[in-house]
Length: 491
Image 1: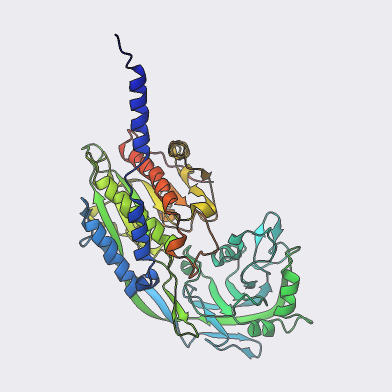
Image 2: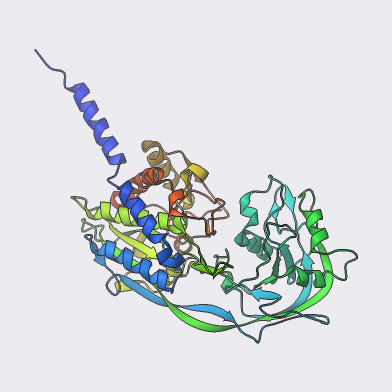
């Protein structure tokens, strides 16, 4: 009897396709990495800290067990960062006869610009600027101080993003403000703490001439004293409805100076290199990156226990994915044609410093022109909350079709986002500015973002694995394709 092999061939091709879409990424290993990196013992992995050093040693030990060349000094590419840990007593804050006290009444953010500003003050509510609502519409803040409520109005029409410091700072800068005063509205759930921190401002604000301060409500009330019957309590009641902007000029002048007693810290990128197998392409490089640092430890509470910013999603999740993909690629029976750099970036939370330093001082004679694409994994652990967002694929002519293709192949429901307020908020942005095509994998902002509640048990490990299947297929394509992607500027 003559046998028909055609269905068998079709099945074989289909089966091989399924296998390639499912990488040998280990869910149990992903979970192990996140639990280690987000543990209390790593103390929030702040760059330059003891916990940050522990995270470095853990990832380096993982890389050392793989078939990777370690770049820099045994895998470490270190640099100094200016850590403004202590505001200088030469800082001051004066309005008329009112003198605020550093540490008691106000505190500069650690990434504030060092300098002075003597200018008028404008209250701009929650500092929100959207198509449906604009706190800046009827006021002129150019060159002035703006006073902004922390958080957002109670109305659900305002997305969570509008409550974040980086959003408010970006909007203030876009409208020309030179100084920002953050004050907590008069809600019982809005703490009035003025602890200095790196906050949520990561877009190189420290390189811009903008002063960033937290002030207490009593300070705000003093600045508002010239406005009849207005104080923080009454403004909160007016602004919380979010129906119309409650912005106005305070018609006062504020003279303030911010300076710091600097203390340099050392941070290190960790770099593993997998050399390409093709003599024509091995000098071309695909970068797969994820930052490992987070916010460290908050102040001691009344129970004398440290509040640790665990950073399980941000970004132990991306770091775990980086480790596992490095393991997958280094164990392939045949290496990709192009070379791959696996980079664990440091000091991202301090202003994307690790990726900026990497591109400024490339190790071992590498050139930025060799880098043909960059894939960034930052916060990929909460698929069930925000879904998968792939941002920046339109930075190349071919990128969007590629990610659509591989998301479909792995049955991942991915939102392909051409532009986002978060585009410049992670390490891929520095590569884009070098005209390198980028892909940013992200599962969105959630209520635990930059909170001590971002813990390992909340991560969606099964979905993380599926996201990494997409990343693997994309990386494999970029490392083996005949032609490199064509960079395209995002409008």
